Length: 611
Image (cartoon, rainbow, N blue to C red; front, side, top):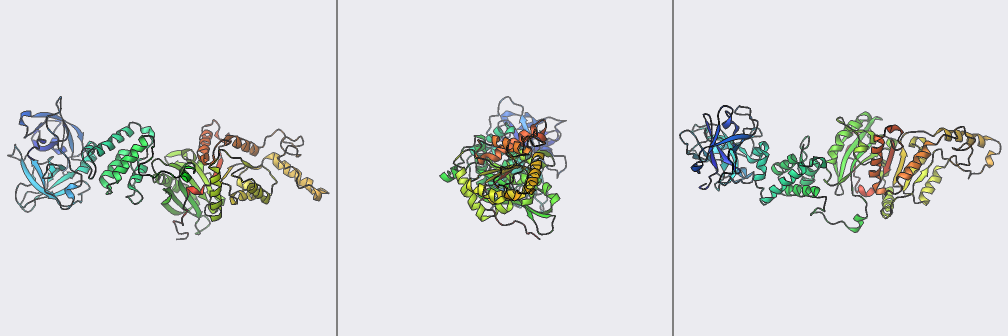
């Protein structure tokens, strides 16, 4: 304490209090000490540096104190009216929890009660780590005698015997022999009202440069708000799977997340992890230092998608009741986010509220993939058109790469094994052939099954929605074809309806029983009644299903299957931006994309089907 020239006497009108120098020209004190600043000047003097005289000061930060003894935010930052920093060493700080770490240390404050213009000392200690009303630590005098905390100590630094600051005295609670108590604001609460303090307070176990590095990174991130770094994801990445959950509502900014990790998370490694992850994001995603280098198999595995899974199943509680489970995959493990039994009409709102929460569980540099695992009869649901939320009308399919998959297929051991083998082959090449299932086809399901197996099909495109050719669509689901695409809307077109009627009439005529079984299908140019055939009343009308498959084939010709979710998202964005979105061929494109390697554990149900 002998060399602590940073202790200051603050005067404003008839009020005298204490303060302490924290930089070359900034001081901390209580807001109530300078409450008359509008009527009287604020002056600062340093009892250990009297040659400086009285220096005028202005309030540059106010904690929002409203005037009552128990109002929060009794903090003010003063700036000295000087051209250069005063020639005094500012206060040094201890880690923020030192004052209430067992055994509680003796604390000392330098105050200016009545008749002590030169100042005097008081000794005390914290009663407990428990905050009073989320704001103050309660203090009790170190001895039953000696100088109590009284008027004139407001704004004084609470210091350890070695002179390091652990808080600021704000109030006296009693001066009788029976009651000798006071209150102080600890450093983390002070930083709540003046965030600049956080950069001055060391972190236990870290060097002095570590906090400065963190806050330099936060300033860089704040200078580029369009970069879109998610504070919730960064927080969860720092605290790990067993750390404290997100506080209600999450974090409004990276700074808020960093402060929460610093002041509230007990894991000493959490803040360095937060800092390193943020540095990685701002530095262009270099490999993280604590992440093992990928092996050769991982490098061949295509994009490292991090799925957010929305799984819907019949609940068993009634025909209209379903179970909805939302989870996030990270580091090969599923992290449950929520599960609920709902009527079908309540699913959309529940999912909207949970996807954002699930995305926050992903690593900050992860490529998110929203995957709807649906009962077979739900596969044509317009989930890509569901809005992100009540306050965000962006379609989910335009906010994230979004795919669907069949629930029975997702949990089938046979298909998962066979699909893994297919993806190992897919990783070695570029685009793949589209095995087309044409509009109005007369191909039988066994024939299609054989064609898909014989052709080692990796992608099948359907010209019509599942309802128009259910048996053929189910073949596609039950054969290990990794990717299926189809238009969600539409019906067999007029030309193929005419062709079907003509073929039925022809096979009903005498001799129809000897008709060849290899007659060209209705989509063949040489078949009467087919599109383009002179005998068709719709000869000049193009088949929308055929047109869809033509456009689809051209669009994905050079796209690796692993990149299809991102490519389809781009198509959805283009369709939404078109002058007539409903007329864009990809407006209702549905993508079933199934790579079991993204879901290493499907897990048991999170929710009882009937409870």
